[in-house]
Image (cartoon, rainbow, N blue to C red; front, side, top):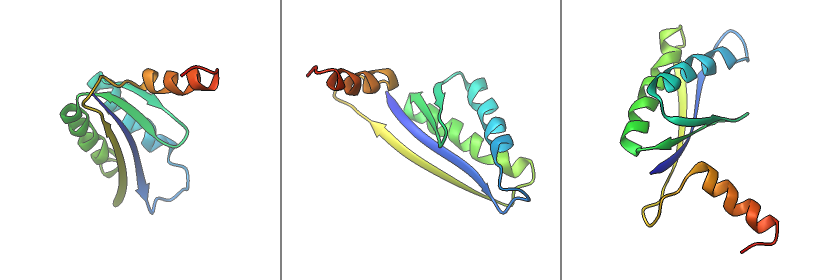
Length: 102
């Protein structure tokens, strides 16, 4: 299972706000049914890497579909193969250490 961080941003729009573009991209993600978390700077997606990349490809097209002429998409992939890694598990590993655990 992979954990992928993605940021999709239209460039050269009439306003510096991109929240409407982000919301439209998230509709595609929600329809795909992948586990995800919206953060202030990016979206984190958890699941099968091939499936995630296919959904990101569709999300990348969304700003073009509403008039953007240029889109920048940044993707960071954490694909751990020695054990199952989840968003919640990664956060728990750090919080346990902050509370004095190993």
